[in-house]
Image (cartoon, rainbow, N blue to C red):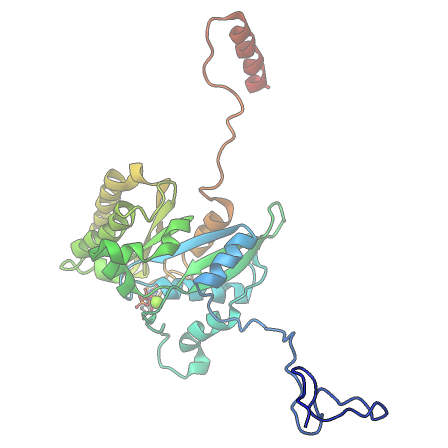
Length: 323
Ligand SMILES: Nc1nc2c(ncn2[C@@H]2O[C@H](COP(=O)(O)OP(=O)(O)OP(=O)(O)O)[C@@H](O)[C@H]2O)c(=O)[nH]1
Ligand SMILES: [Mg+2]
């Protein structure tokens, strides 16, 4: 019997029979469809998705930092709730890649949840998660702006305050345009707790700066959250305490950041006369209009010398300034 050379069939091929099929359609499954459309689920973005968005278009990164239960997530929920009713001052909702994630967070505060009181669930300790909102100015003077918010548990910031390596894990800090330091006024009206609230919040901000995670050009906004507790107390002493705390923040941090400001916020007041979302329109306007990325071009030179050409420039720019 003659040996069959390698690579040739071991049975003779009849040239008149039909060519064999590569696969038998009756016994094999259809090959997988290669181009499946991956529809977005609308859940929170993870760090990879957030980074892709930041690379694809200009995005404002807004970090909400603060201890457990200070009111970070409720603030985000209220931004979503206010947009359900229409525009917020001059800003209108122009889309979100994470609407289902917003709705999930808002559910416990809605009547449909059948809870007796409005609630916000404690944010779980997970990797960084981001929520997205696109905002347009009503008179369209500006292009729509993409806002990316962190929704991180308070424990994460409490751990970061106590440990440089933990703080250095929070890589989203590096791209923060606005850093919101959320302080809980419910605790500030408690004379035994109020100094600790300020001390701990300053500890978070100091650690983020000392670890070189937060840029010195970042805009830092200290939020007096749950301000309804102060407004409803009618005690002038609480307001004078806040004044002293603001002075202390100014002394310690104003020279270390791009801008330091303070805002009274009551995202979901449950006492006194403040309306839902007190302070939020002002915040939103600030996020949309201002960014550390905006710098004055300074086209007009400042000083001139004694040379004739410099005196000419001086006369020219004086005319420009005067016009
Ligand atoms: N009175 C009052 N309560 C508020 C306000 N904002 C939030 N709260 C309540 O404060 C509690 C904590 O709010 P969260 O938004 O969950 O706080 P958080 O900072 O996200 O907390 P963690 O996720 O645990 O870090 C909830 O019970 C809210 O209902 C407010 O403006 N006024
Ligand atoms: Mg939360």
